[in-house]
Image (cartoon, rainbow, N blue to C red; front, side):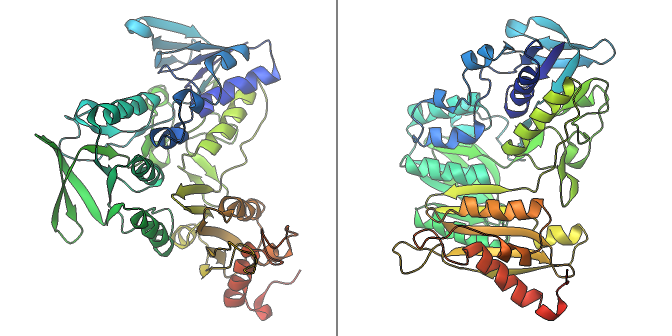
Length: 464
């Protein structure tokens, strides 16, 4: 049995390792477009900041580890065509040498590529000029070279999503003054604006200049660096002179290989797969950021996340051997550190819930993370969204200090969402308590009680 995996990141490597776990006699070949398999793209901002001193440490597993696990790696090899009938993968190897790889089962994990917004000059300027997109290890090394050669004192980050905010922090940590430009009304638009303002304030507190509701329109190279132009939502023209520009405005699924072979696409152009990660093409599965995701509340959507890619890859790898594994679905749990603040979300916000046919209502509260009499307590701002008609928990958003275990508390809400619990049911959970770490009613339960009190009076609650 020969399983071929296309893609050397989370999904492709996970699929290959799962196949080898289940049957060590299986031959597994992983076709990797670059030279760096199984590296943590999520860790790049912390390498740029200097908090991770050696880029080798970003590897989930070294090349030697992967080979010891039985994976045959074809590095610097780009898959170009799938011959579905012949079960062959055509590729271009190092030095443009053609390669033909036979397979019994194929798992495609080509991931996503960075979005290139319509900014004048972005297609003509590059890393040598101090203009960067950031998505791969190659992009990381190019940015590192710019930081070394240019010694920038100022930088402009286009985009204030997860990577943009992490890079604003990373560059600030290096002593670079950062200007951040975001087209949305508030930073971190995956949160409701009232919570995004808390993240905004944390950025400003650490010296980042924020321009929301603003688009970057052009980048030009001048004698003393880069001249960036933009426009505010009210039409006001803006400009900045900086040494470095970083564009991180999201990703789009990399689907060309599968689409040319006849695979169907769905949201955002991602390839449609079923719960077994089958593409509908014979003997071809796909996983990760190139595919549409099953969301347990929304159905089919596009939500590229590393955690999802790992899970989907294992499912695809098992089924490539003839298994019957199922991807249980995502609920969009995410968390972000911005300086001394942590922002997290899981499930749906109100506008998403309305679009999905629910009758949502939300409540915001700010309980302390532990008993206030024990030193060091901080409030956690928690916004809960539930269904008015049924009481079902639909989503939660949290913003708290770095010490408040916000990341783990959102996981409790995520577990409740995964199992379809009502908001009121959260109060019955038997959660740990000691004054330095929590309260008899944990912060997540206090927030749940606030929602129940406001939106589901006792007389209207469904009785068992």
